[in-house]
Length: 438
Image (cartoon, rainbow, N blue to C red):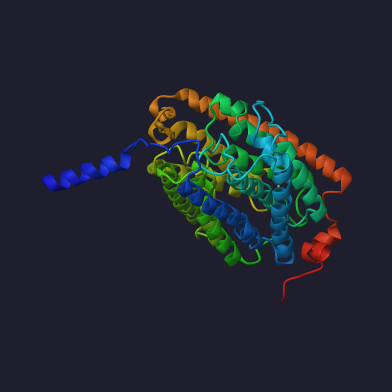
């Protein structure tokens, strides 16, 4: 091999496998660059719900339920945001109790112009608060995909209210607010447990309690307009840069690495899912391409700030394959009507990604000037994989039990499901008195 080619090959391999160490910003004072970056990240994550998730889901339901599905994303944003202001933020991110936070910051008491959270020491605490609020919003909104076309609007509002406080807030405290899973050493950079397992398991439990849509498995339940779903998936993809990159809580190399891994995982997931469809069905569907991309995005989320870019590609490929199998095979084998595959994509992807974080975590990515980084199985730390598995198990158990209890309360108070006549008429007209034009 000519010498210049050998040198270039060696340089490329070095760049590909490099494990750079990053110095972090000085803690304890507000940094304008970090603040600007986090304002943008907050806007991107909110964009994921409105209009991203709303369009993604709205395009995949039948025409008679499009407006009702969009309305659920809007109302989830409104309800969760105000609850976060009142109680959610304080219970999730203040206090030193291992299981639940305090009420010291209820109604944002003490969150002033110059206040800095101990969890984000270079941005105003009120910015940290609203950034975390956007995560709570999209987690509740994700559940819409499992109950699409059959849940009462009033029931969904009450569900969001109770579920946020009973399920989401405790898990957010355990993982991100200094709770017992954080103390145990669980790695979840941007929400594999808090967001994706939480939403996926809640969606599955809710779908099982409500029962299948009338005609499931017998009638044509084809999507109304996949072009809307593609637009929504595109907005989710871009918004995920704020979701994962912003979880670095500052403008620095770790945020960039998280964004790069996120993009590569989405690409790999789209290729893996559509490739499997192509082989098994003879044609790659548009729905399959965007589902694979979202599977890659959800699965990379917990790992994104702990891994190298090539790890993101591997995780994305695994996500596309495993999530496809759950959505195309397991769901129909067991006959549960997870309408828009929230469990198959987000629940399964979140669990897979959380476990793979324990495999691929690279110490140099999370290292700071004062603290060593955290390694995974590939760097000889098998214990981290055990911790990740415990985190998955605890999240699944609490979410499943909490969701079931919340649903029983909601059913007793408001009733969960529309009547069969209302379902056949469509929720747009039955619940909102509106319909799309012919």
